[in-house]
Amino acid sequence: DAFRLQHQRKLLWLSTLGQRRTIDRLLGFLILLVEEFGEPCEQGYCLPFPLTHAQIGSAIGSTRVTVTRLIGKLRQRGIINTQKDNLICLSGDSVPKITPN
Image 1 (cartoon, rainbow, N blue to C red):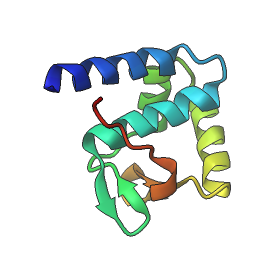
Image 2 (cartoon, rainbow, N blue to C red; image 1 turned 30 degrees about the horizontal axis):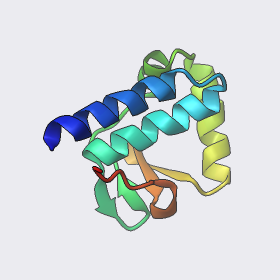
Image 3 (cartoon, one colour; image 1 turned 60 degrees about the vertical axis):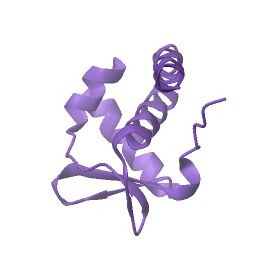
Image 4 (cartoon, rainbow, N blue to C red; image 1 turned 90 degrees about the horizontal axis):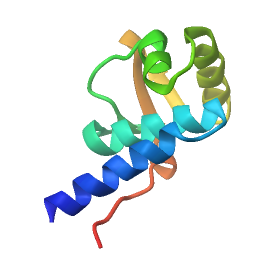
């Protein structure tokens, strides 16, 4: 049921972009990326490619400055970690599992 899973992910993407609060869009975007591309690491799951704050801002309809500020808040709360080269890691508890029905 690859089609169903793909459809579910697209609905989650639309839901993420529809969030009013930027922090919700940011976290939803990162979770979607980690679910699709994330690799297990010591911190939880890491993206295997770097993303700049400007790229993230463009993807979620925000600015680089806002993304930088919000990533700092998520880092303080222990939800994400950043590594060299702008690699982002989400703690394992932050990533919900999507299972096809």
